[in-house]
Image: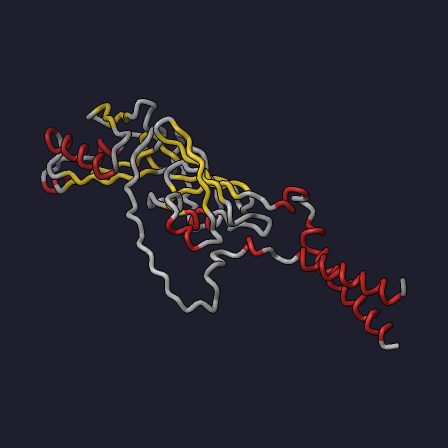
Length: 282
């Protein structure tokens, strides 16, 4: 085989290798909506169902009333219960962890929903809250207070540990807290530092537990149909797993092969192509 033929084969191999090392199409979000597409797609947003309280939720409850000022009827006794929990909301903060809970000061007082779905509230005692929405619990507490203890009570309640877990090929795997009690897949991924180049965006796994069953569902972020996926909106305690690509599974920690080898192969390919052109010009 002639010298220029050998060099031509080497150049072709280098070019094919470089093309295999380029960023795959799976790293592009919603790629089926091309830049040249002038069509405006309009889809209905499904209604967001209110969160329902479950065992192991931590509820922050605050009671206020006008009678605390006009009639000197303090409501502080209803705000002194619970245990102090130190929880760090991470949604939008770029980092997916929460600090632990304890009885030390500096946290927010909350009531842990026990395995039976109850909380122990000051003066009132045990109250069943599991399976109810926040609005239903607010109304229930307000009625009981108004009947016997407080005039025109105002009840504020929220779930302190409303969270999802993001693991796999993201920058900050861990637990993500949503202070506003709602989160979708994109918000969870953004809070976890986004999917890394080695992660697959076309096959996210969402794991969900409720009523004694566990569900496994897939979300494809390469498609704009992800917004209509029933698992696009996450629920309390969901787990989102970002699967790694085949290359990342084989060599997850080798930064040279992932980042530097494509550049090196590009230089080698250019040099070989130069030699081929030079040889053919003789």
